[in-house]
Image 1 (tube, rainbow, N blue to C red):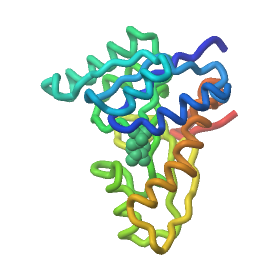
Image 2 (cartoon, helix red, strand yellow):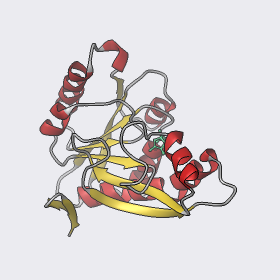
Image 3 (cartoon, protein in one colour):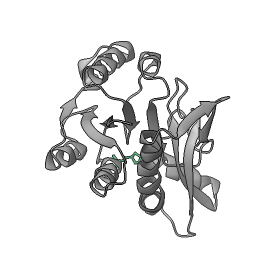
Image 4 (cartoon, rainbow, N blue to C red):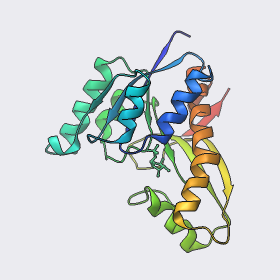
Length: 209
Ligand code: GRF
């Protein structure tokens, strides 16, 4: 398989982007190359990480568009112009509509900081996910990488990794452990599987060859 051009979409600190950058440097993304970072707002540290690693980046600020449809079209146009083969949502918090999924079918993946179908869907992002997990009193949480479909956080699951919840956890300590022990491991692993052509979707379930 030739080079798989990866576009990474970000909205914040970019620690998942950093995990992908480090994995590529270690030769762990196979033929995957991170070729573009798109931020949904200016000034986020993820853009610094791209610059520090000579990765092209741009800002598609949600506030510059009058709605989800016009934003989604601009995003899909930008991705196509840059020849993206795989789109990775890495802490990307802006809602996009079916235009993007239809133009990149089964080629968009997302990392969610919980074991889907738990603690996911509308409103479950960032610390809110871990607040809900602690409120429920689960003993295990974790992270999920899934294929993005029009329904939020509901696409076919590629990889999951469980992380123990500690008695004295706060949302912040749980988030940190899930990022370190799960997100930063399974996101690069899922990207590698995609780049190696080992992921297919049958009956809405991921088959890893
Ligand atoms: C974090 O809540 C992470 O769990 C989720 O997106 C948020 C920001 O991640 N995936 P990042 O540091 O910007 O990658």
